[in-house]
Amino acid sequence: MKKITILLPAYNEESSFTLLRKCMNEVLASNPNYEWEFLLVNDGSTDNTLQQMIRLHEEDSHFSYLDLSRNYGKEIAMMAGFDYVDSDATIIMDADMQHPIDVIPEMIKYWEEGYDDVYAQRESSKEGWIKRKTSQWYYKLLQSLTRVPIQKNTGDFRLLDKSCIKALRMMREAERNTKGMYSWIGFRKKGIYYKQLERQEGETKWSFLSLVNLAINGIMSYTIAPLRFASFAGIIISFIAFIYLIYIIVVTNIFGEPVQGYPTIMVTILFLGGVQLLSLGIIGEYLGRVFNEVKGRPGYFINSYNGKRDSINGTDK
Ligand code: UDP
Ligand code: MG
Image (tube, rainbow, N blue to C red):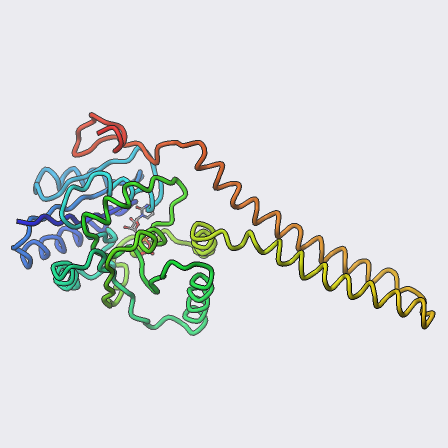
């Protein structure tokens, strides 16, 4: 029998567990032709999430849990999960059950047909015009910067074949943008549609600022194209400055017009100052990433895996 793991990263989700258990039981009941494992990753929760996981594991052996040593963020929590799954396929879902379990049979169907990465695309829902447009523009921009094909409106909700998990496991970077990684590794992909459900319990961990951060992160970890911005800006500004120089020589020498002073100098200094700071900022963003990667630290440590403490991270298993 093929084995499928559902990977559920959870941070302060104690109130979601009743629903989670109900949903997982439904998955078990409606897909009896597979062996199921539900791997819960506790991402340093400060509430009773861990206690809930321990209870589930003790009451039902389908549930395993991995307890991280602190809160690392969802990206790292998933990375830890990848290290600990040993199945033919893995489905990543949010522990708040915003991802509907009824698309799971469809995912499995395409996987059985030979697709390695069956990703779920959010159906454009009742989001406002501005939000829809910005996300459209963002994807356009991102795609224009890279040759890796990008899947729109997708998140981490997807089924990954063992081969994808193996590939992802090799990517140990600390500054993670897992969404970009799914695209980067390639393999046979298939998109299916789903409607995102409302969060039933607890609250979202995303603020507006963290979304902006995510967007910048998405570009920075995908491509180094922004680094070219400084060179292009330099070329264009030098060219304009050169034309302006000729213009000034001509008007002062031939027409004898007095040289304009303060406003032109102010505008030029401020404009160039802005461009320079922006370029420095871009270089700084990449440098910061280099700094974090170059330390070469392990991505995470764990307190325990199913209550056992024999290793502190996935790499020395
Ligand atoms: N999550 C996590 N670590 C964090 C933040 C979130 O593991 O530091 C988990 C969270 O428990 C949930 C999933 O990531 O299962 C998605 O988080 P959330 O529901 O807050 O995001 P949203 O659905 O609002 O995008
Ligand atoms: Mg959610």
